[in-house]
Image 1 (cartoon, one colour):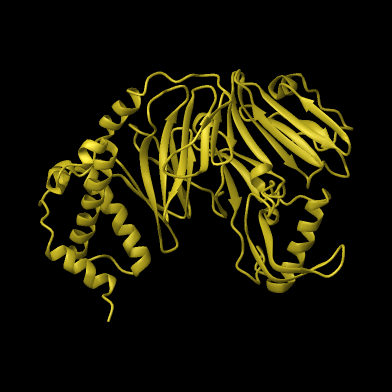
Image 2: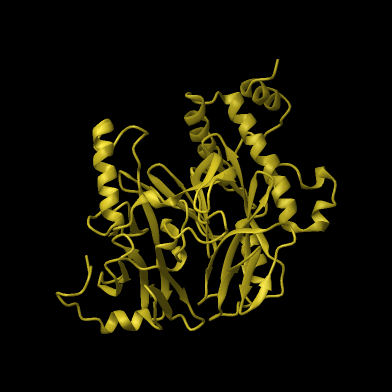
Length: 435
């Protein structure tokens, strides 16, 4: 018979020698572990189980600390890096490692590329794995990216223009119903989603968001009732202090109003109207981490799902018969093109020399807006009642944000969205406008 989680923990506790007094870091970690254990087991851990949890943390910290200190430390006997005194490197040591990377090259062009990144046209690839997700700030040169290591996700920091190797910040392991993240300094986070920042990462769970940046205290921010942090954050959270929220979705068969199947019909009608640009379905919002200020976005949640077909055979020139259909949340289609219906491609926000701005595609695909995140001024950049066939935005090395869109067969561009916003004067005829 397989051992239960409880028996394993008790066995570990019996063979683990722990100091009677805990340092501040261990006390904070144990508190987080208690909360996670209680949520998953339905009861508080016993003193013996708490000792076992702390022992697991110390052992994990020893392994991560050795990896962060480099090959020389990894080559040492296990006893040399094990134990409470050397469980993990300190935040101060990690900050020193980042400082030793040298000055960042600022005002750079950073772009995602297949398997990696492009920094001012030069490819960056990680020998340990394919770059999965990333966040960056062109004005500071900070980059954090992730790679897969089996089921785990490793978060690494890279400094634009530096010849130094990337520095590992943390490793996230999947647990029941979410993720557990352990930094190389021994800090532990538990949550439903983890996303990189330009320098660090965000961890969210129901009702709160935690931000980690090397050398700084990790403080939580409450999220308004009915909202959660969106899994994918395309914008510059670190510099603007804004995150993208997603409205909590009802359980299958229910509507947000709890009206069951009838409510589902209303939801479907509202979604159809929002897709056509005829009604509002504000399933997303930008929230300031410090003030809690919200900017509602007329973007619907439904577009984030994509159906991948398999085992298909051709019935006619226009029709295929497919045996399997798998619907998942995906940023890309089966042909590796962007899934432009996904919210990730419809909202981006930037730190610019003139202040933070957001660029959004709303009202279905009818309107592109630029929003001043300080003042709330919102300008219509492009409008087409029948919809825009393509849209994107990006930030240049000087910090200016360009916006491009295809209006049927007409390709249009705005070179400086910040200046466009400053000069914008709303008119009654303007489609959409500030909300």
